[in-house]
Image 1 (cartoon, rainbow, N blue to C red):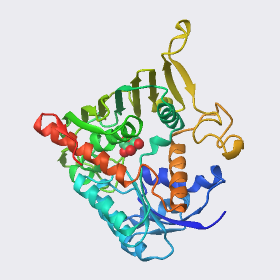
Image 2 (image 1 turned 30 degrees about the vertical axis):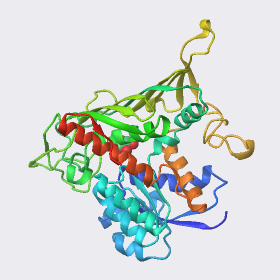
Image 3 (image 1 turned 90 degrees about the vertical axis):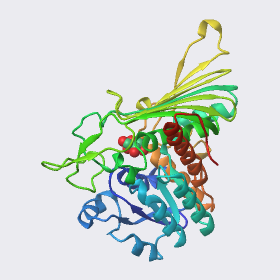
Image 4 (image 1 turned 60 degrees about the vertical axis):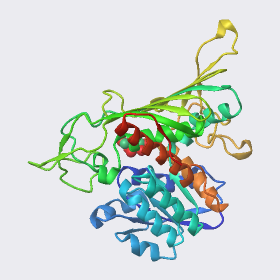
Length: 395
Ligand code: SOE
């Protein structure tokens, strides 16, 4: 293994854990790595909390000062998984310090901040990538290959859903994902951002949107621990806070290439636990994906013989499928065919492409240019909702 890529991670909740696992596992599954990741430090405001996970997550040090971290010359890349309102400033500081930047979605809480983050990394000439991990689910990457090869023909419809149900109880407290000043938006930026990124990648750019949102539960108890992420508990006898983000959002979209799109994101779809799904209808067929059946891609091919017409289920776990085979026909990357993989592998695949990008001094897609495009659609959705009208996606 050649040179090292020395990494620091910011954040230790859900995404901090998913990213730590990816940094730990990537060299185990990707022997062809050009740079060896070195997990130098994990950073968090709460010393006790960050130290409590340091060893288990695989980091050499636990630190509490981001500014001090950036002064170090033994850090090449900063991986940001902190709440959304911290992203833009952290990116700007990391870029100014000459560090490559990997950041969880969404890039920022508004388009202006997203553009500033992009300008900072471009000015510094550092590599940048946003973590839309689902692009690297093998079945979705297969969908991309099939569409790019023309197997769906002209695309008529994109139908995207990202449905969860973890907020349906009024007892779920005022965690950061339901506070506009921290999250920027609710299910729009947290969930629909993923669908928008996938739609951009699989179908194309969006020209205009119409959008409606709703906050179903407007008051929630304050958190006992303000640093808590998903699963945080309400304080005993907590005061009630006011939810100022969307619980559910529906968007209509017109793509620049003429396709029509619908997007739906919510945390109030009882029974849907992490239903990130899409259906794409083209002139030659249809593709359907459902994250809750992550290894599978449903395919309808209009050219099948009449007696065989129908949806087939492709299981994207063979060596020929994206991310599933070692280079040069070296056998399975993860496991033999049908020994299915999971959510965490989408992050491992993403981190691999990030490291390969840095080795080539490139910013792998989706990078911050892509992230600004997604943020522009998020902003257009907010405007369309406020104006109750169709809105052009801003540049
Ligand atoms: C919300 O519950 C969430 O954790 C999102 O923030 C992630 O981006 C998504 O991948 C899983 O669900």
